[in-house]
Length: 395
Length: 98
Image 1 (cartoon, rainbow over the protein chains, first blue to last red):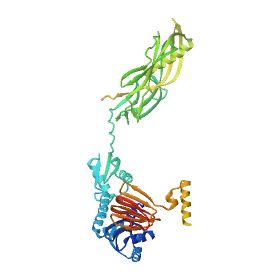
Image 2: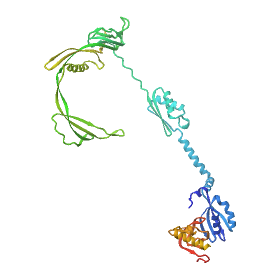
Image 3: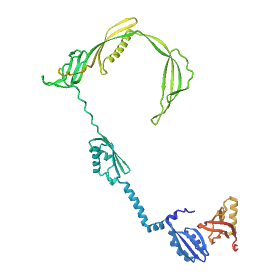
Image 4: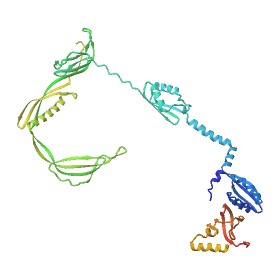
């Protein structure tokens, strides 16, 4: 069987065959290998059948030979449909015109929205954008792509740090981030810089004011380092002295270290309990009977499970119970001194600022007493020693 | 001579299990329910009306009787008839049919 849609594309006709013996005409058609289908008997000696449009030209001769008359009664298929459509071309033009209009209108700009700008900046931006041709009713294909608009507009508007441009359908969105001018630091009250403790000046850097000391000069606590009075004598100007003054400080620390220490060491015996954490609840699911160790230490491990960057509310964890035993560690005096140095440094951090630098360290003296070592360590430390002191009026 | 050839073919069909319609140029008729009849190896239409189809065969004729007949498709040696089929009959050469 031939496929039924092919003849609908090429077009076909229904013909009426009238004659004394119309079957003869059918036979002839078949002999000539013409496509012929849907043969109906409509009356005495009258048949109706379908024939391909391309093969119509052979029919007349065949009809003559088989002594029949043919009449065309219907035209069907695509070529005839087109012809029919052309007769109603108003409809066709309407459809095409509609599509064209829809396309044009959807490619116009129907809105410019500005977000996050102050009225002044918004006005400025609106003007700049209009100059670029972005206004209601403008065609989008004459407007540069959003990335380009963004760079142009960001350059043009001085008061905006960043302007994001996006196109959503027929609307342009401008997201404005305005510049925020940093506020000026408030004027500080005029003052001097004085020393906080006894030190040797190691280095000084004066931003504002007049230096009153030199390097390697010894200063006592409260000595003037940087003066807040500048200018000629008699008519000085009061400013807030600013700067960094680093002084070298000598510091003695006394540390006592016991010679024996009690430590705990693991015996190697351990017991693990597995947990499933759900929210804040811990559910042990394996290891129910932990042994009872005299001395023990706990180690806890918790995993975290996440999916797509999202932390899951349940996760796995375990707790190890380690058996330990006490050991006494006898320390040599030299080792005790090393430990003393370390503890001494810890003491320093309490006394000085975080930026303090230890430039020298020396054990002055140590003595053993009652199983303890007493160590006296001398440190040389470089630290900031300047402190603000306001200038009192009339001083 | 013709008789001999025919007998030879018949013998071959029987002995070698070959389809009879191919070997002996016989019609192959396929019926689908009572509304489609598919006929191969026909030799032309003798008569076609709404109630009757007469086909020429190599030997004799094939008569199909029923109602609302439409030849859906016709090719040399092959055709599909649609309608309500009531009767299919083979007619020997020379007899009138009904």
